[in-house]
Image (cartoon, rainbow, N blue to C red; front, side, top):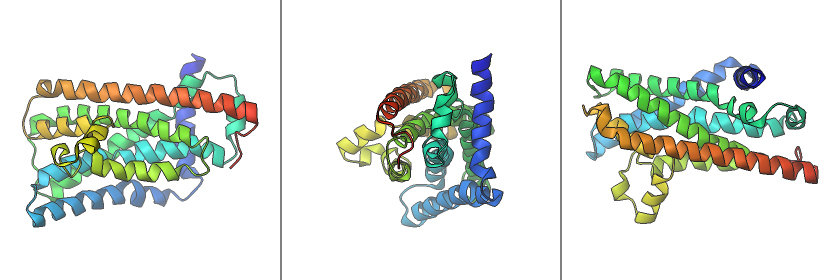
Length: 261
C-alpha cells in the first residue's frame, strides 16, 4: 500500500511541480503549440514537395510529439531533482526506488497521450487526414503503448541527468533525432542501413508503423507484432533506466556527488 501511494501521489506531486513553479501559461505553447506547428510544418512540406500525402506526416508526427512529455518531461522530473537540490532528501527517504521513480512516469504518459490526441485532432480538422472511425480505438491503444515506451526512454535520459551537468544536453538531441531515425518523416528504407538499425531500437518506430497501417484501415490484429515489439523496447528502456539510477545513486553516495553540478 505504501508503495502504491508513493507511485501515485509522488508522481502526481512531481508533475504538478513542473508547472506550479512557473506560470501555467507555459503549458499551452510548449505542450500544444509546438506539436501543432510541427504537424503542420511537415505536412505542408510534404504536400508542396509531392513526397507523401498528409496522412503520412500527420500520423508520424502526431505519435512522435508524445516525446514532448515522455522525453522532456521525464528529463525535467528526474534530472531536475538534482538541479533543484532536492535529490538528496528524495533519496534519503526509505521508499522503494522502483515506485518512487516509475511513479513519475505515469503523469507524463497521460500527458503524452493527450498531446498526441490533440495533434491527431488538429490534423483531422486542418489537413487532409480522414481515418475511418473504426480505427480510432486501435490508434488510441497504439498511442498509449508508444507513449509508455517513450517514457521508458525518457527515464533513461533523466537518469543520465543524475550525472551530467545539464540533462538537456541529452534530451534535446534525443527528441530531434527521433524525427530522423524513427520513420516520422522519412521511411526507414530510405535511410542508410546503420541509421535504420538504430531507429528500430528506439521507441516510437514500430508504433508509428502500426499507427499508419491502422489509420489506413488495417485491423489492429494485423499490427500486433509491431505493437508487441514497441512494448518490449519500452520495457527494456525502463529496466535500463532503473539500473542506471541505482548505479548512479550508489556512486553518488560513495563520492558525495549527488548534487554537484
